[in-house]
Length: 229
Image 1 (cartoon, helix red, strand yellow):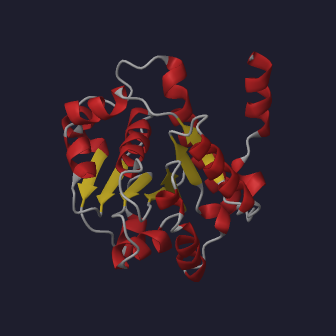
Image 2 (cartoon, helix red, strand yellow):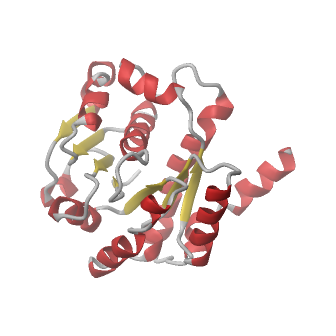
């Protein structure tokens, strides 16, 4: 597998940014990839959560606090960048550096209101819209979630995943165990599918495919899912 760099960013805090960063890093590690974790958020939660697991993954995990252009030549297969909740220099550098910028959003206007600015910054950095997929977190059947879904559809934002809220995952991350400990297969699947979709999306983007639907829609998987219902 070639190297892949994923940044996780939203200007709003509390949307699941660090949780997704940790999960992506740990899935990569469990699948026997070497991971460079770059913690740009002053809260240090990304570093702390992965630091609990550093001995478990032995020499496969490296954690640092700054992102440098030379990291493009790092020996790790995966680079996961947890960004602060802003669009200042560190976040802009992460956008420029990453192959894909994952944008977690909750079903509220605050986590959606700044997306236009993020896409504008990314465009100035030469990024395609398809390189900034949203990850919906905790979208349910509430009126607010329906309004948020309609806004996302109206603005044609790319969507990589729709993740449920699972109280076991934050507990695992703060307890020093792998994120999926105690989760049944159906609970793990949405997060593992996100990881796989990022891999496939980067391949498509590297092949010059920029159409949002073609990059992020997995038609065969969706057909299989529907056949199982």
